[in-house]
Length: 259
Image (cartoon, rainbow, N blue to C red; front, side, top):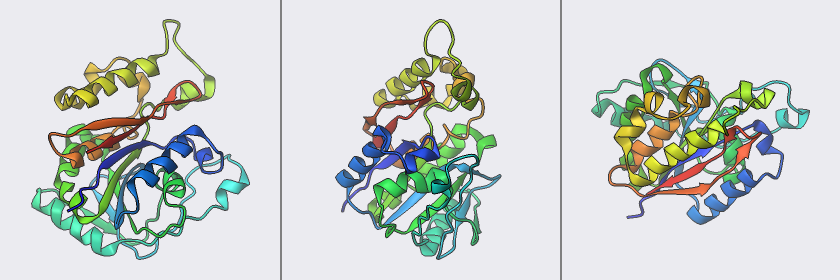
């Protein structure tokens, strides 16, 4: 029985959809290595709800949830089919883990989902299910959600957490860096060391333990999908960093594969 890995992808700017960036090339290479799954479960930072919500439509509109970008971005469509049966399966797994969830038949794919998928599976022929993030419930909640869904990895489902290893847009647009070095690198290196070593308990307390945590993530929604992917990996897991890079010096674009 094939066991699919889970992934954490830093999706970065929507411009990765139309520019031939190193990050986009790494997503294409990763998908070529993995092959085509039966379905994709995407946990994107750009869908925040109070309780876990799942896309349940057979068709998924492409959401252009950004402004001020080139017109070419707004013309992009990613018409992947939905996965309503998988949504019901996920609801069952979450219910068995004492987690309530809901279905949204109108919700489509935001850019945290379709930008990386546009490069990974450009034919848009893999059914996609998107799962929302509950930022106010923190890392432990998302880890538990991921753990509840880990059996899907043996059912041909590729589970992806899509966010950003660091995400301070104010610093990105003003290019503000502290005088004593790049805080984003220090945060990224702290996380990397603990992911590779399997020190999950320390990662769960990232907001108080990681260097520059609140500057790296003024709000947590782009970091939390990491814990869904980590939970889906189960224990013990093996972590491999498949891409390192920065947008604008402060947005870390790290990608991790968990087996």
